[in-house]
Length: 254
Image (cartoon, rainbow, N blue to C red):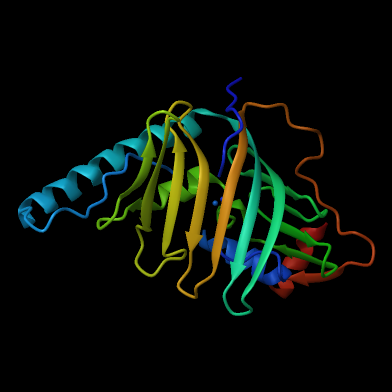
């Protein structure tokens, strides 16, 4: 079993409404690096700036590959994280903590401290939000829930302008800026912090076009941890309002 020690840290749109959570999570889940800001003295030749930027991107890509290899080699992992989400439209901040359990190829479970849940078996997605008393079910699979660091990393690339942000060799930590591989994808930028000793994501901040921002602190990551029976089962609580992605999704409750 590989286990990462506790350290600071998977989407702009939180649990403010069941539909917003389900569909907004499609837009987020992560990595880190040595910081050599791209800003150079005015006397430095422009060509050298380009070369430095290219070198930083190459280093960042190498780090991303190393991190992805670690997650790819694991059949399952459990992540304890804290989340701070800023909703620009209402100018509000929400705080929460949760535990994510992922078992390949497609089982996903997220349990929040207030009793909220997100569960996917790869074919359907179920979400329960206690604050609103709503229960959402859809044919959407876990691929639409970007709380998984590996899923995030695989869809992003180093920001060509500022690939490296900060680093601390003493603490074995680096932070890098990433942009989506697909044009117009959300979030438009994520800043990822990586433990370069354990090669895991320990921090992530996602920024959206609308100004929303979600920050995650991955307090611990455990690979190949035992999974409790029933972890990926979520039954609609009595009295919870049922919402579906479409009229045809109702059969997913059976």
